[in-house]
Amino acid sequence: TQPVAFHGEHQAGIVTPAPDRLHFASFDVITKNRADLVDMLKAWTKAARRMTAGQDAGPLGAVAGPGAAPPDDTGEAIGLPAAGLTLTIGFGATLFRTAEGTDRFGLADKKPAGLADLPHFPRDDIDAAISGGDICVQACSYDPQVAVHAIRNLVRIGFGVVTVRWSQLGYGRTSSTSTAQATPRNMLGFKDGTRNMKAEDGPKVLKEQLWVQPGDGPDWMTGGSYLVTRKIRNHIEIWDRTSLDEQEQIIGRHKGTGAPIGEAKEFDEPKLGEKKIADDAHIRLAHPSTHGGAHLLRRGYNFVDGSDGLGRLNAGLFFMAYQRDAHKQFVPIQRMLAQKDPLNEYIKHTSSGLFAIPAGVRDDNDYWGSALF
Ligand code: HEM
Image (cartoon, rainbow, N blue to C red; front, side, top):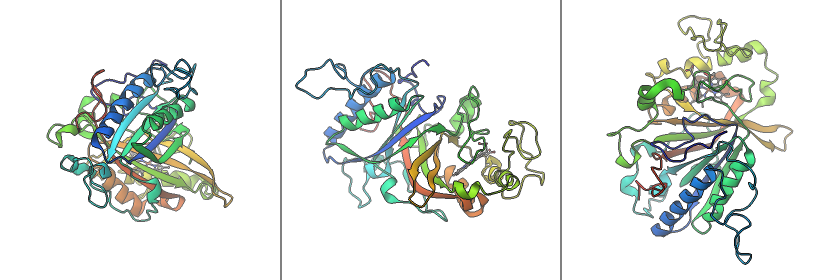
C-alpha cells in the first residue's frame, strides 16, 4: 500500500478508502494557555505528517537520540510501513465553550452552528465519560499496531496540554468508501455500506452532502465536514437466536448477497414502492428518499471490547458518519430510526460525539487548526 497523502484540500481519512483498523481517540484540553494549545497542534501536525509517510514520529526516532532523554518516537512501529495510515483531526463544541459556558481560548465566536448539541434520541443510553471531548483524532490503518502507535505518540506529545478522555479500537471496517472496495460485513453478519456515499459519487454529490461549502459558515470550516460518532452495542446473543427471515426483514436485505429483499444482486435498486421491503425495514427508514435526499458517508468499525461480566460479548458497531450538516442529515435519520427501527431491540447507543472536521492541511508550513487560531 502506498502512503496516503497527508496534504490536500480535504483531510485524508474521509473519502480515502477505509482500511481495516481504527484507533479513535477523544481528548480533553487541560491547559488554559492558548499558545500551548497551538504549539501542540503544530507539533501534532509535524508528527502526523511524518507518521502517515511511514516515518518515526520525530526526526531522531525511537533509538537514534541521546540516551539521556526520552526518545521522540515510542518504537513499536519500527520496521512497519505506514500501512495506509490516515490521521484526521476534529474539534468538539466544548473546545469553543465549556459546558459551564467558559470561553477558555477565545474561540466562542468561531463556534459553528453545526456543532450545536445533538438532541437526546429515544432509547439513548449515553455514557458521558465515553462521549464528546474537545479534540478527536481518527487513526485508520491496515495494521492495528500502526494506528495505535500513531495515537500513542500524539498522546505523548500532548502531555500537559491534553489528556485522553476516551478511545475506541475498531477491528474491521463496516463500510466501503470507494467502489474499488468490496462491501464488508458488520456484527449482525450483513453487508454494510452497499449504498454508502462513496468517493466515486463525484464532486457534485460530495459538495452537496459531504463538504462544508462557502457560505455555510463559519469560513474556517469551508472544505471541512462534520463527524458523528455513536458507539452502538449489539446484543448479538439475542440476534443470533433470531430467525434468518426476521433478520432479513429487519434490515430489508438478503443476508447472503446483500441484495434488497426481492432482488438478486447487491447493487440492485431497492424497490421501495413495493411491499416486499417491510414498512419499517432499516434500509427504508434510513433511505435518502425518506429524508429529503439526505445521505451520509458512513465509515464505521466493528468492535469487541472483551466481555461484559454477564456472560456476553461487549460487541457492536462504532458508527462514524461524515456529512455537510449533521443537524440536517444524521439527526433526522437517527430520529426516525430511534422511533421505528425494529433493530432497536438488538442495539443500544452508549456513546455519542459530534466534531467539526476542518479542511485539509495545505503544505509543510500549515498545521491542524490553522484556520481556527
Ligand atoms: C444501511 C446496518 C445503524 C444509517 C444499512 C445496511 C445495513 C445497516 C446492513 C444495508 C447496507 C447498506 O446500504 O449500507 C446497521 C446496523 C446499525 C446501523 C447493524 C446499528 C448497529 C445506523 C445508524 C444510521 C444508519 C445509527 C444513521 C443514523 C444507514 C443508512 C443506510 C444504512 C443511511 C443506507 C440506506 C440506503 O440508502 O439504502 N445499515 N445500521 N444506520 N444505514 Fe444502517
